[in-house]
Amino acid sequence: MEICEVKGCNQPGQRHHIVFRSQGGLDFKLNYKYLCPEHHTGNESPHKKKEIDLRYKREMQMELLALFFEDTYTLSQIIDLIGEDKKKLEKKFRKVPNVAGLYKREDIVRALMGDRTY
Ligand SMILES: [Zn+2]
Ligand SMILES: [Zn+2]
Image 1 (tube, rainbow, N blue to C red):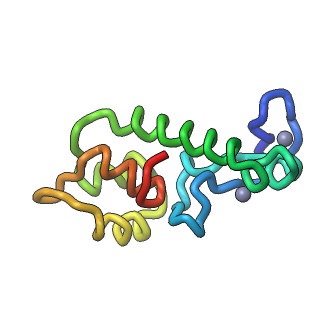
Image 2: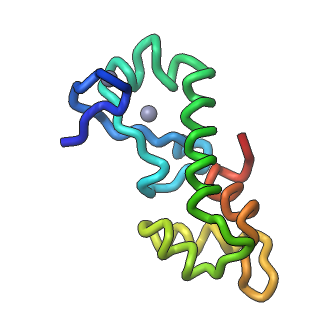
């Protein structure tokens, strides 16, 4: 059981996709945030308040930029670092620009954020 990640909340959490699946978000740990029902879909939640949604997305983007700190990565390195959903990552990265199989960190982060930046 995961606990709501909102500071001081401590209620049981539901899995939220920071980049929604409808926005191209994939299933991997950095795209998950555990939120109780109120913090997930209530008035002060990313599904109701644009600022909260954007804050979570920017935090995730910073975490991805910290994770991918080198200039370029191969697909297998990307898969190792993300650690999940190999098939979907392979499919996703077929459309991402690369030079001889090397992907730039900006392009990797952009792809993982749903083909845009925040
Ligand atoms: Zn959600
Ligand atoms: Zn909560």
